Image (cartoon, rainbow, N blue to C red; front, side, top):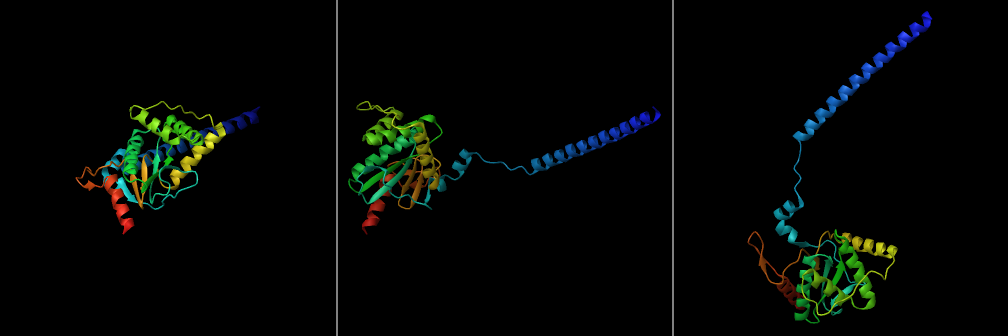
Length: 241
């Protein structure tokens, strides 16, 4: 009994020492974390919001030279003459009013420059479920031969403009697996050309972010910016010379 008690006493002592050591280690860790947080707070960098970035870099983000420009593919959706010498590539969101507004600008330019200008439109999948479903519905509309009419109907609806006739559209032509494949294909295409918003326009070697208006306008700095009409005319004139 005596030796058993001595063993128990020694075991308790070791256990006590272990607890003390663990407590000391815990305190050290807490102090270390506290110092780290204080240092991090001292070196904290304010990260600007996307709105701030856009506001501060309006001129540079409005347009820039393209590093990678698209070319016409076999299954591209083309508005206007396929043989037109100037093709405007547009990544558009089919649930976005800015894309809808820009489509009207492009349609006007194509009408005024018959045979000279065409638009190659590609879907940009935005954050909404309607953006994806409308893009898929237009795949089905293309298969049925009424892509242009369905696209106009969707955009007119977004802009609350009266449609001459109702156009029925759906996504029934594709299986769920095919829809997923198409969605990924659209997203990969946009990422390939550095497109992260809509509409994004490629014209010549220039990329334009946002719905550039038809007429010239002034930005917030008071600088005059070419509207789509003048930009197109300048490119067509330079191509003739």
